[in-house]
Length: 99
Image 1: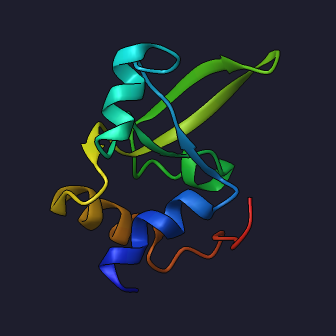
Image 2 (image 1 turned 180 degrees about the vertical axis):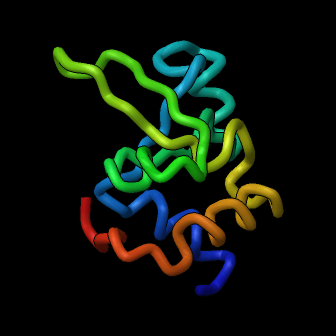
């Protein structure tokens, strides 16, 4: 997997989640425009329950969503983000091309 495309692969997966403290406020919008994401998450139950990643939960659509945090706050082209997503998603069997 080409490292330049791993963030796009993560973002296009139906199990990916971007979540965090900046959701819905002006600071969050400004950071996203600069290429930052709050948290790079995955909601697939097998990944959440694998024990490989820290897990968080939050209310969403009248229920509770659990997510594995693949990487915390980071810029889309940050080498640490690319490395974390390559490790987590590079050969993921749950990856789907469409959300």
